[in-house]
Image (cartoon, rainbow, N blue to C red; front, side, top):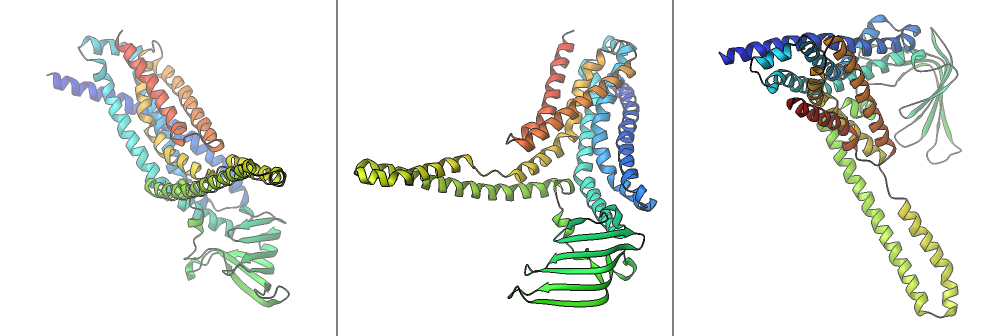
Length: 425
């Protein structure tokens, strides 16, 4: 009989939480979605990009919205559910029926763990895939609609090339100049009266430009005064091909899985340790040299002291400079921040529900409304802590683990303290 009562309690609490979670998730999801839509409307739709491509970009952005919405919705839903129970005196009824506080809290805690795991899966699998697809489509749109990324009468770097553009209209860019570097390191300049963007997917082609009335100059690798020139009525210039490594060059933590990020961190850490070892070795050698110079002065005569004083000053200055210029790898710091953030945000669901339970019990009136309002405040506070921690991590050498995990630990600690305090009442 007691088992059946527990099942009834679990179903009742779960149904209330899931309803609140659905409402909260849609709220946060729509906020992020509309924000992205407004940004795209300003930067893409206004430039004549097809609606189908815009919808695809939005589709590829969905994993990032889900990753952020799920933890925030978990906190707000738990506050709304327990706030409603408390304001309707249902918590008191459950306690009078013999149910312990943990039994009342357990269903939502289980949901918090499950949502954390699902959110982590989305963050680790779907988010990198969506980011890569977004970058590829954006690249294709940038090449077929030059006005999206290129501005008229401007200079823009793209991979190993420099693009110099003239006027831009529906026909293309005219004139256009591309300065690129070949495998030998030599720069080649390509000029065209008109460069029309195109995609030839039906012919196995890839995004690029059809350049008309082309003139090219290539300097000799042996003699800088010698140049090779050529002209043509037209040429196809491909910035992206089936063997292009542009997405690999743009690869970052945002479009990589956790284990791939960890491999990069290990490589960067090993290289950084080598640089630190080399720096430490050079510093020790300079200190030894300085000590020997001091010893030579101490044992030498007046003339030797005068001759060596300038050398000692220079060596001491070099040692001080080396002590101040300890190698710092900011790139390694960024990768570590991204690595720990991939865990911090999804698994924030757990400290969120631990904190939400005692806070929700404190609601006396309008439980759902109060819970929703407190949820907004706490999610804003949590996001502020993450932004502040990330900023500190980028500007200083503070531990990325601390700045990313501390917000979760802070909320978890506060939740446990409030939980045990409420248990004594």
